Structures are given as C-alpha cells and as structure tokens.
Length: 280
Image (cartoon, helix red, strand yellow):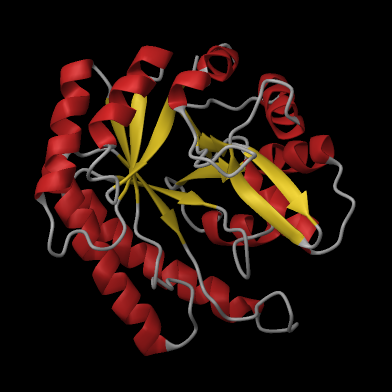
C-alpha cells in the first residue's frame, strides 16, 4: 500500500499552514516540499517550520529538489559544474532538516530531441553529475530519486534507462504527466494505457514513487499539473498498470497545482483520489 502526498512550494509562505491542514483532513499522508529558489539562500526557516508542523500532524516528508536554472545534463562543463555545486548545497541543507527522499531532475535546455548523434554526451553529463550528488547525499542520509522530464532530455524510457542502468541503487519517480505531455507535444495520438505500461514495464524494479495529475491539451499546448478526477484517463491508466506490474510504490504525489478552470487546486476536494491511489 502506497502513501499519498500533496505538493508544497516554499513560495507558499502565507498559505502553507492552511494548505497542510486541508490536505491532512482530506487523508493525505505526506508533504512533497519543493526546494526551489530562493532556498537555501536566504531562507532556511520556512522549510524547518513546514517540517515541524508536518511532524505535529503525523505527516511524512519528501523533498523535490531544485530545478530552475539547474542543468545537470548540460554538456557544457561550466554550466554542469555550477549546477552540481548548487544542488549539493541544497541536498546538504535539506539533509540537516530531515533526511528522506530527494527527487531530482537531470535536466538540460539543449535541443537533444532535435539533433541526432549527440545523446551520449548528455548521458555522460547526467552520469557525472549524479555521481557527485550521490556522494554528497550519502553523507547526510538523503536518498536521491530521479524523475523523468517533460522536455529535451530524460523524456523517453530509453533515455532514463540509459542513465539509471549505470547505478544499482538509484531509484525512479515516474511522472505520468511529463511522459504524456512529451508524447502529446510531438503531435502523437497518445495511447495512454500503452504509454504508462511501457514506462512501468521498463522501470518496474527501479520505480519507488510517482507523480500523478491530469493534463489538458489546448491546441498545440499541453497544460500539466491539473487537478484529476477518478475518471481521468491518466489516473485510470496509472492505477491499472501499477496493479498489474511488479512495482512497489512507496509514495504517490498528487502533483496538482490548478483546477481545469485555472483556479488554485484545493486538496480538500481530492479525498476520492487519495482513497483510489492508497488502494493500489
């Protein structure tokens, strides 16, 4: 049985207490706290307060690592090295607060998917970065978990496997919406069941967690992180595949930020989703 969590961002400084209580009352079991800028510079008190309040309510904690301006798969050495340095700072600071899972993107803004013949450069860059981050994380008790991306690199099953197969102990967080959005943006008619099944089949023994939400296709744009319903195609495909594959999911985050009408997501309205996912 997986535990089901909700996302929180350090930018929620004025509303995080209300959101946390609402999620707790809806049956969520943990917080996935996004550690993006401006933390750990200059604010270290907000994450400490969030973790302390979560503990009071009996909620567990997962960290989502920084990703803005972070390019761990860049083949440009100075860009990659600067990214590694910053990520290590964040990992170490997070480890001082609460050692747990630390979900990480191995991103780049280079047009990997538009030019053939250079993918090995990005695999090597991602591998080098991950080795350095893992070394730092082990010293503070953090477990690095790699998530697939929605654009450029680490967007396909083969790319993710090509990196993770080099590491025996590194596990995977499957972002269902990222996988769908990448396929849809390439103009494909996406078979959602086939898509989700292919990812979990290839990475079943590596997969420890998941991000789920709905996506809305608007013309040529795919809007991600939309509040799902139990009837959502992505949710149904994920539940079906997770139940049929030898996947041991330790955590599932309903990573919804907004409703279909664009208004902010309300965790109190997701009780049925929590129950559905908990029963996987």
